[in-house]
Length: 282
Picture 1 (tube, rainbow, N blue to C red):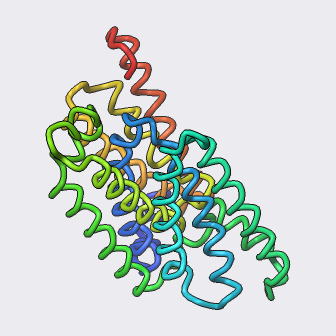
Picture 2: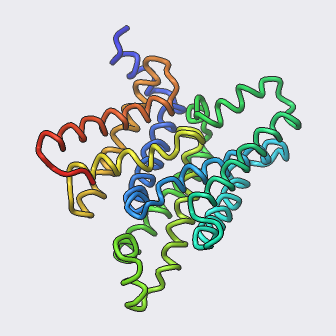
């Protein structure tokens, strides 16, 4: 059976269609936010929040509650705390991310080991960290929830595009014009937390920041206009996500890692194109 025939056969299954839908939506949202986060030097907030989401999901597993319902408010709260801690002169932004993320991940792993009733704790941890199988085991309710949350993120981004653009490039000037820059920074952090929780099923806790960083960096090496970078980043993210899922289904490779490697390959290609054309790196 050829690769095309194998793929055609798998596309008849609901779980593959569900994975593609969620993969496209999550990658699109991560790419939209990624441009602003990278330009504001907030890109590692995704990594920090993903560790918090891991800890929250570990607690949810012990409490036997739906992981996403529990992890979402916890991660949003962590985003608010990170934003406020980053303004604290005693705890700089990168230190605040390290303190919260490492602490949350350590607590999550400890809780899973102490309270888990599943004999295969290592398998559970691997799935949560790398998204090995969870994207292929989504239920219809999971897909509906992901679709609603992703739609909310996209609508918020479109409605507040001009404000987010202004805050991204010149926060001080934006505040001086009367715009509540801190409010839009908070909005950006909260929406990022939502995307992080959605992405847990796609690539796992350790690879989420790649969805945020790679498409944005790739686009910045090809275009200089903010709008063009946004559109290009979204296209790259969606294409890489679909390719990653297809390759994973056909060749039985880990979904999250395959998607990230597709993003990394596009980044390498865009960097080479930028170098050959003489464009400076973003």
